[in-house]
Length: 348
Image 1 (cartoon, rainbow, N blue to C red):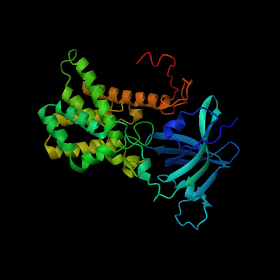
Image 2 (tube, rainbow, N blue to C red; image 1 turned 90 degrees about the vertical axis):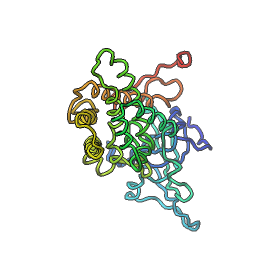
Image 3 (cartoon, helix red, strand yellow; image 1 turned 45 degrees about the vertical axis):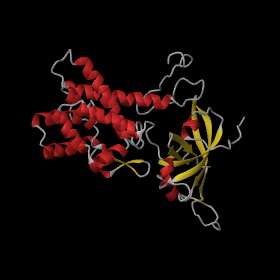
């Protein structure tokens, strides 16, 4: 039995929590759209939409309606969007009529009507996802980490993270998909990785006295420096030309090397931090040109991978409908995630 369309507009997080068989409405910004063809040769679209509460992925089948109501002229009649207009919807605000269906035991979202809205009335800035952690808290945690470094490294980090560069770092996303793909995502991810790396360094430094905690902090704070140039919010997260053809690791190492020279950073320190940046993905097949070869690089790469994996787990499981404990298949992690139910409250 089909549930009547809900009168209240749903945020993405609320829509993601719906069980199969529900209909709903929402206003979102299009963060990604891709034309595909089904097994019968008919066109459909994979679409990702976002608001300040997160991202929602859906299918738009060939019988769906694409309507243009963005024209503010009250005498103008809404028309259907041409295919070329559909392809360029990324970054625009749309209203959707959605429905959840069961697909192979998982909830899938289908959009039956997609309406392009007037952005003078529905500003894209109101629908941009951002970190749930207040920026002033992230700033405080970030500054605290810099303060734990040795004087030379602390001064260099303050030189790097200053002025327009700091402003860009604080606002940038950490990705366009998979993890921390929202405004302030880069600083959130960086702080989380650095705090985890610092905890590991403090645990192991009695066992390995040569471990340099300041280098761990510096390497972790700088490991994604290149994402300032590789990604942008416009207004949804997107990859830049530099990010697409150079990648954030190469960009970050080049920027770091230039800044280290400008600041007069000691060559041995520069080489060790540079190695952390180049190796932080842990494996060459994941994009690192070199493998972690120092204690500090091993720790930062491990912290970065852990933060990514835990984010994927939480993103996949946090909005599952009541009674569901296995997530939809996560392509980035090549698995389904499990969130045991029943003793959640008792374990907190």
